[in-house]
Length: 339
Image 1 (cartoon, rainbow, N blue to C red):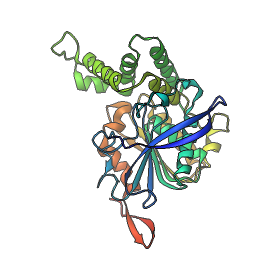
Image 2 (cartoon, helix red, strand yellow; image 1 turned 30 degrees about the horizontal axis):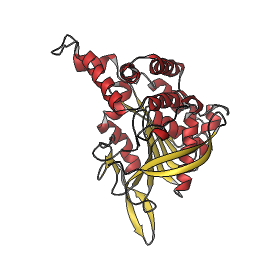
Image 3 (cartoon, rainbow, N blue to C red; image 1 turned 135 degrees about the vertical axis):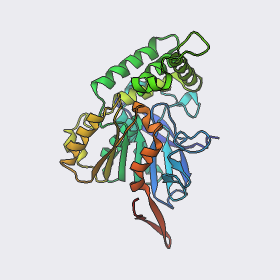
Image 4 (cartoon, one colour; image 1 turned 90 degrees about the horizontal axis):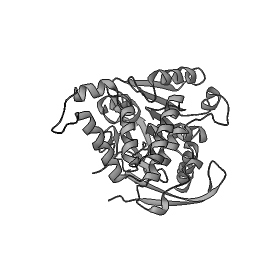
């Protein structure tokens, strides 16, 4: 059961200056809203607001007595409008090139306003979700105590733009667009070393190498659960991550963020490369003190943020190891001693 809640945002103006009504859906987990610190989780490209439960894509990280403990926090997750998770045709976005990552951050900000949320304990997101976290942190510099972009950056590189361009071509020209685009994307989310370790040129019962069957499986799986307009939109959102677009330099723009920025990179990421994240850290650290960086060591590349949960939890535990302290009708949080 999806248990989606909805917020109507009338007359939202997108990147092309066109006004449209947005139906923003979301889910809540853990403590009731406004009774505990709130964590906003931004989903990745083919993800959704279901972060916990039978179909929860971040169950290894979020839940009762887990790293992000739903016994102590309220976890809020919006669906990126048009991602198709509600299966409502009228909520799909077909004019996808008129939307940017910053537009999504603006929509999320309006959703938070509707929910009377003016302070978050943390914003966390992986890949495109982390890029939206960067955009939201600049849009609302006082919003979050902690900003945690994982396997992402404040901007996309020419390499990512190039691959998003190929994805868009596949999605618009292939006879089986979702399957083919997903197979292409999977080769970017992993590394040659990861595929070698997993398959070692083995063949299955068919005349196919196991890596070919694996790619076919992931392509077919996405084709069975995703919508073509949704994939086009999400690819566009990824391609447009850039907190400096129409603004000043990175240092000038990002220095306004009041909260702690915790960058988490992956040493083998071929998509958002570790050296670019380290450059971001060095640049931001020169103008802002409350910045940290942690690195996941993995063979698995970009997808390691969905695989290496022990490492990810160890990096996040110092942020989320808190407990709720009763204080009449109010609450406050205190940091526990980090282990």
